[in-house]
Length: 339
Image 1 (cartoon, helix red, strand yellow):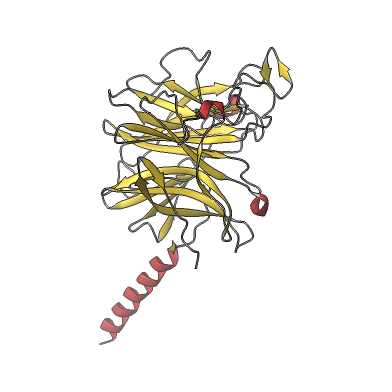
Image 2 (cartoon, one colour):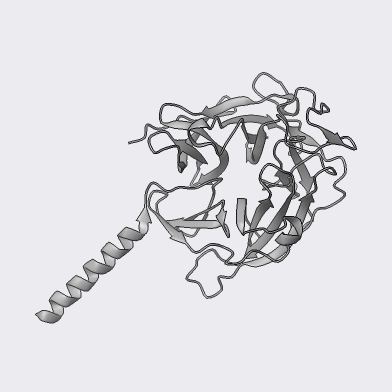
């Protein structure tokens, strides 16, 4: 009898311990999601790249960071880099998970996009191991009129892969990748702008060196995410200002194009490269601002994954997941009321 009681106690203790490991109101920044088998994984900005897992997209377990130590190359791009890695993007191709990520000096385009790969996301699998593939794209102040952060991979209907990226400066850019997705395919000169808040993309508001802005200026756009739906590619982007808690004004816009490289236009036909973009989601009484989204399709249902600044919790950045619906060829979403 004592053995049975002890067994019951151990089982109950184990269940409670696992329950305490799971959270439903998690603090994240710049989340992206993917599913392997029956487990959902979130990767987001954090020390070494933060990682969470869930069986239901509601209860989340914090996993160990992707990188215990910063990849060696990062100090060459951002001196004295402390392993706080931004805005990862996860995808699967040819037996590997591809995790693009960004390192940067805040407020500067002293930045770089790197890549790590893994054969599995299941942390209890003996094969689980991240292999860093090094620097993919670098931006340098006074040299580049773009910022190498916020990467997002998109594959077109011909199987060609592209990386959309960028924030502020000259806006959101897109570049073609090699077949193995490990390198940029071609020069980085004159990269096309696919989204900007400037109606005149050639306008240079900040001070410039050799014609290139040396600070972010007022072109408040970032976090591109391209999602293919039907005959169109949809470019989601975040505008205005993140990372300010109760003063955050983040919001999401969208445009679409028949080609992955654009031009992307909004509902009114205004090109996103010239200040266009249809408002998709903004803050309300529950959220000071919302943004930096990803879009996922699970079992035929599309979801908008993003972070918002919780108006009921001191503006702390929290995970948001909303069903994404479509009407007349355009995405629609409505924020649920926070409990």
